[in-house]
Image (tube, rainbow, N blue to C red; front, side):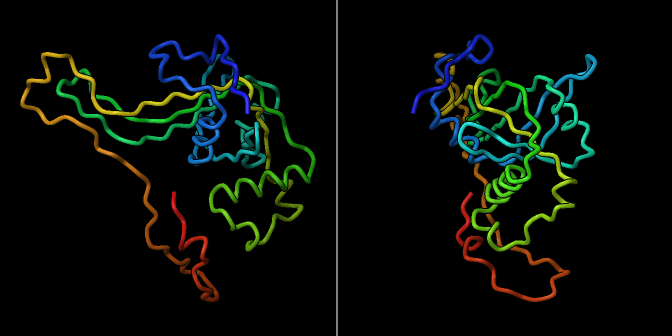
Length: 216
């Protein structure tokens, strides 16, 4: 599996040792996240919109209402920047200046394509569903033709891509190590809690095993 080739736009220049261009790292970050931020510009006005996504190989899919201004705009070939960020810990240094965050992030640059083929659109919606909860697609009702028409799906190839990762503890100035200040890392993680049934339920099936065994 070859690495992504960094370009002038995706090469990590500040703290380049944190840059990652291998597919394993990029895929693992994208597969662990749920929300991406989509940046684009219309008539000189920049927008950054949070939305869900799904990945299949070297592509990601974005979706939403057919009335979405963002999706209509991107389907016209507007250049886009998509970012995904995962926060793994708060890095507390002895000085305010050196406080930081342990994180994993991906930046994708490119141009999205409108998905018009019904089979590809249905597959994209399956990817979205399985990304949120693996095993869910086989249990739920699939989208109707009307629902498919009401949904816009865009595909963005993973071509110009880079990841950036920070791990480890604080890096203080040498004299500050003598300060009587606690320093270190406060790890953060997403934890699944007890499922809450829909109060509008008409029956009471057991909680699915894929939900019982879910780990973010």
